Length: 266
Length: 319
Image (cartoon, rainbow over all chains, first blue to last red; front, side, top):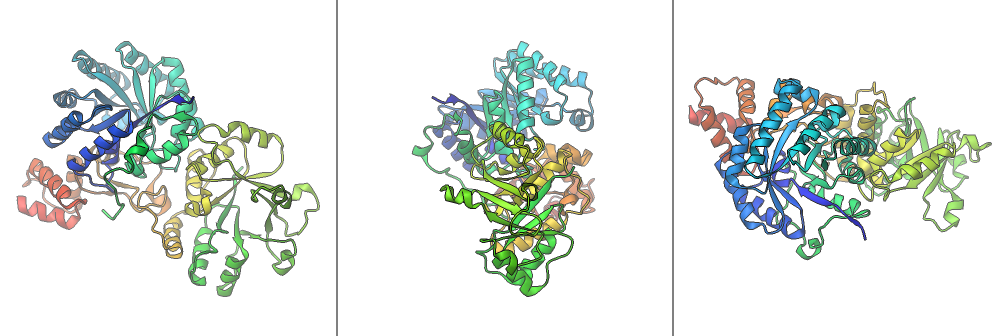
């Protein structure tokens, strides 16, 4: 009997952000239904702060999925989160840049300011009764001790898991394993691993993270996503399937996804 | 010390009908990358020679089927051959013996090294114990990780991280090897390989490779894909404009590509402002919100990103 691990699919968010691919809301809804049927644990449905059409789509996805949890993606902003709450998703996901490079140069904040905002945003969503996951953006280049500090604070707010994002896709299986294991061991928080494929290692790194104790791996169909893409769902199922039960028993019954992508010139 | 990589691309091209000239141009491009040696089959070698002698300054290895071939094709840096002991044991030839000194028979074990192929199913960190055992033997072993489970590049880099010195790879992973270009960039990122060569030649190699294999390189293929440094999403454009390192693992110029902000469904204000500036359009007379909304609508309607020409038209309509 293989241990269970779970797929969190982000085709509709990180995948759709790729300039290589354009998905209409109708297509996104079809895909969400398919993910729901085959056994994907959680579907990252979209970014409500983008506007009313995106919000309607997230709500439509929530209405038409029976099994999967539906999550909405947010920047570290109360305003973003308020838009998500309008959609009543199962999970509110808040992205928190954690590397010094991202905190200082992208946000123009310092670490203390980041911690304060993170706690404000998470508390805001938790107080409304939502399950919250926090995305550690650029975790692979961040200070391990700082991430432990953040994770411990999140545990106190009943956040059960964080997303460990290899935002620029630079990890190897060993470094992914060590970093995920360290964060898990030092904070006790659950981990979702989010790979990018810049060096062609998204699948191998995701498997290594599962071996280190991550419970969830993020995927997209055909591995679409920013730059070289995210972890390809089919490839991960094949590789991780050597070791784990990925909870997609219904996949054979449902066959191929209802929407295909081509990688034509944008 | 730098890793010693063997580029096996020219050992995987027998099946493609192509002109000797294009084949030679690909060899010339790939010979400029930081690999220790380039391996080729006899048919490919004959074809290359029919056009021109091999580019100077590289170590070439010929894949042969019997030791007598060394006399037929003298002058190579080394010869590789399936290890007959392995073949006789019923294994489908998963070990090669490489004789790097141009001899048919090694005069001592130190002169040959063994290429060990396989390991495809050792996904994640599963390969550690196998690699550890191989490295403990203190023999000079070359790893040829297979890509059946999409992990060959990762296996190769892990092998190097654990102290392995030699690895066999191929361009774009042809033949099921680890991808040469991914291994190079990852080893550079891990500071295990100093790359002084200009690798912009990878871009030319992609074009020649597609011409030979008649397969397009996917636009999102790591290192080679034409669009891997294209960025559309608002939050990413914003980051890239502040400091490209925020969302790029290495500078695009390193591999002959360019960064480009493209406009579409996920564009934000930063991208629009940057595009207006790039096209020298006056920002003051434009309602940014309206422009953003109509841009997104247009992108969805035509199911593509918005070209510069279309963008200018949109701006004109709103002015």
